Image 1 (tube, rainbow, N blue to C red):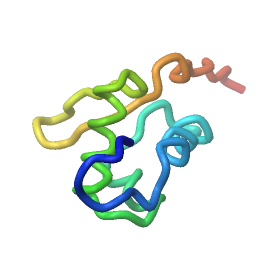
Image 2: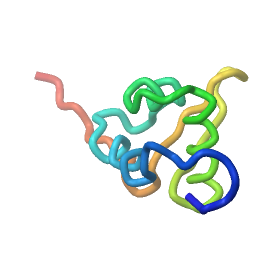
Image 3: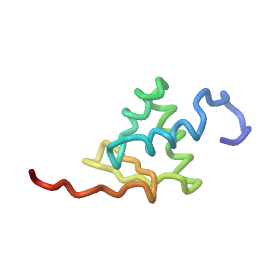
Image 4: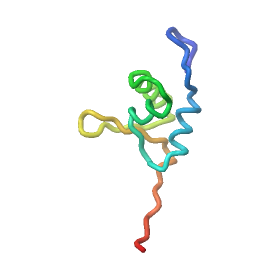
Length: 83
């Protein structure tokens, strides 16, 4: 984050990005991020958009209301073999 006006973030960019790298899901929602980091949804959304603007994350709107986020290069899924 930059040192611009407003409150300083209590959650670092690395903490946000680590959620993506440690998650079993290839995509996360804004609400999941906010809940995991115990920050407000609006604050989480602002931080996620900032990370996307800087090229760290990608997003896609889903169902016209919800946005899913992912960490590029860390979204591969392994096929599941039927038993």
